[in-house]
Length: 405
Ligand code: NIG
Ligand code: FE
Image (cartoon, rainbow, N blue to C red):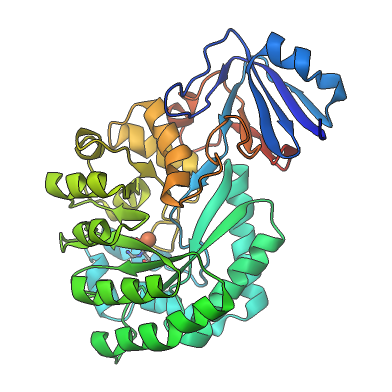
């Protein structure tokens, strides 16, 4: 046997998030982690017989506590600079997100702040947010570029993401999103040309992103422009993702299905046909209830996707328009706002998040050989995650079997 990193035992509940049996059936449950990976999940007696807690580098008596996989936040813009709280207040007075963007605010204002920030500031800002996310139970997070909108700044953002990842226990999955907005004074087609000919080849050459995402939206990038960007990304080895049907139903979901994207995200205006197309193509629908909450918009309808035969992921969309880094809060909104059952919402925030990031090593589950990323709650069941919004019920976080928060 390798190194016995951790044995967590006596838990009142273990959420495995496995497709067939997402909740362990046992009086009290235990998880053993060897060499950073889950070696056993089962009743405490059986697991501790094979993996005695006294032999483990970390042993936790989790009596009265629930154990969950670490959250996988599959959609964030967590690297940004500046402050847009005044836009939040303006939106409450009736300004719309699109008005603010059309006037050079919103994303474009964050672009100015990111261009003005130096590299160390960018890295430090992201690390602070990763600390907060980790304290709230996120162990894997996707972070997008997209506040540079020119080759140099997009690369600077992706470099900052890599540097923050190196120095932080949270695993960071980088996404290139040069097509996040059209820079002021530029024509959208001309900008798409720059994304395709200047940015994507440089990003691919440096190997600093896994996915390529695009904001497919009225007055931002059309379906044809989005397709051009995502095709170019794919030619350079970047897997497509799409911001689809957020403010209007433009056709981003059908495009995601057509391209076999890893995910289609937002989907506030997606139809039953869109859901069926995503399900048939195996594209993960990623729902971001924090954004609807922050915008005062109607939530996406999760039943639309389950009726079509797929299950959504839930993520935070952390960005200056949705300043909510906690996956527990996203799960609470998924339940109280979108009507999801607590266990479905937790699975959406763990295993389905990993699916949206095409992670196929068991990330987001507590199953054999999955990464030993797990949460011990200060509560007896996963229901307390959505039941107790506004604070975190996460007491202890293990990453690859080591206590990190
Ligand atoms: O996913 N919709 C586009 N992108 C982000 C918002 C980014 C921003 O407003 O800074 C989103 O909601
Ligand atoms: Fe987004």
